[in-house]
Image (cartoon, rainbow, N blue to C red; front, top):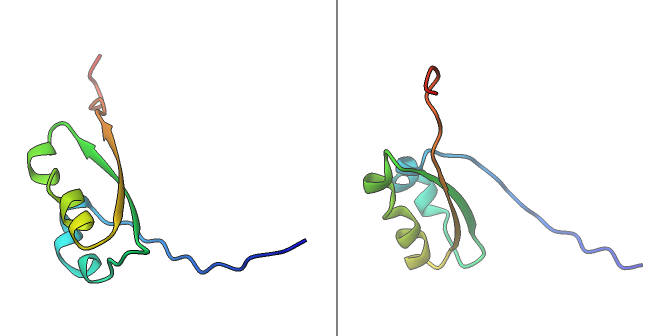
Length: 71
């Protein structure tokens, strides 16, 4: 049996925080999963393009959460 050792690192950030520290860590080995809400879509939609432009790969998920009290 062969065992392959990998080093992985994970952090979580709000989508709009990407323009600060996390942006500096993007490389071709970077994989980013992001969740975009309908209410913030206009502000958040450009982050995946920035990640891809820096060589990283992205996977996006659109989420629409109900606010407490909504039917």
